[in-house]
Amino acid sequence: MNRRQVFGQFIGIATGVVALRRSTIYGQTGVRLTPLNDDLAVVTGAGANLLVHRANDDGLLLIDSGLARENDGVHFVLKNYSTAPVGVLINTHWHPRHTGGNANFGSGGAEIIAHINCLKRLSTTQQLTFPDRIVEPLPPEGLPKRTFVDRGELRHGNDVVRYMHLPPAHTDGDIVVRLANANVYHCGDLFWNRLYPYIDYGSGGSIEGMIANAARILGEVDARTSLIPGHGTVAIKAELQAFHDMLADVNEKVDALLQQGKPLGRIQASRPTARYDEVWGDGRFSGSEFVQMLYSGKRRQVGGKEPLKTSWQIL
Image (cartoon, rainbow, N blue to C red):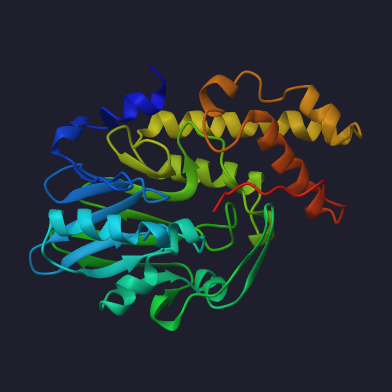
């Protein structure tokens, strides 16, 4: 049984295991809502992992909104979870897998919160270079109305929601969101659990930033914290540590080969991800594709010519 099949039965969290018989599924696309506790649930199958917090007087607070094409599924599972509307939507960064539902929620009255760099990118046409793709700006109703530079917080029901910008890593607008009382931490795409991550070098990202921010998050959480990655299964601190260590090791190997002047093909042939591919390469990227992304991004950083662009559907 592979890990996707395992995830079809259970989601591991810091306090134990939540059986999916308690979940709600939108049958047409497989969008699924699974409770983590009485007030929190994770939504999967919408392009990214969304987190929802419900409060009797404050309605729903949603972290990320998923792909536009998954709007119907997201709304279906949320309505089955609570009759209250989404009053607050927090975006962890600008990519369409995390902001595609913004316009629907914004037009429904949700206050959208994001880092100022996220707003800048959502407001203008973006040119992605890996893969080669144009992303059009969101309509006004989908744009964040409350922005911040460093950090902020709000009270939602019985919890305090703290959000903070971290230095450029996946993009230049990444934030993390912590529900203090529940001890749940949404990492956005700064954490991909058991998946090689996408790093958007064109939006200011880098693997060095990813490593540094994983270390920062590790310093903020404890063994009982439930970690929501942008992609992959709900995790605990030890799994984030494994992510950090994998990135650091692969980066060291790729850098050493680049310093030797090795071309992309030779670097891929040396298999710097070999020890990790069985666990981390069963997702959006194989080890070879991940190495190509790093090579392309590092060449971009120093002004070199990038290798052939891909058409992978990353966002």
